[in-house]
Length: 92
Image 1 (tube, rainbow, N blue to C red):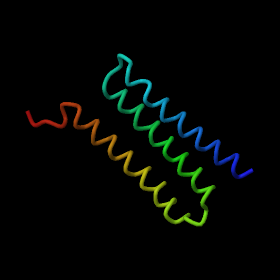
Image 2: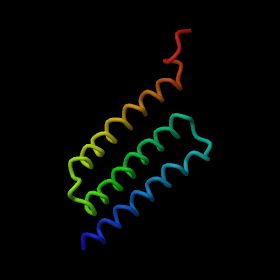
Image 3: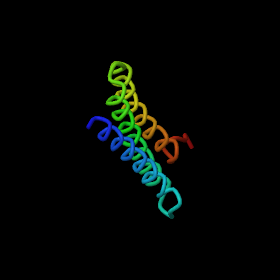
């Protein structure tokens, strides 16, 4: 049962990765594309780490640290990239 749920988490993570990548080929704004990519990448990566947590539960401290790091790093990186892509990042 745990293997099935773990495989499901891996599958959901991969779906989120592709779901976030697909809007990059659209004609929307750069900020929309960046937001879609960062949110989907964060959720997909976190789902994969949860799947790993179910598979190798003896490594739970490291995997919990990875989940927290993903949540913080990807959120902050998305804001920094969005700020730098607008006029707010220049002193003109």
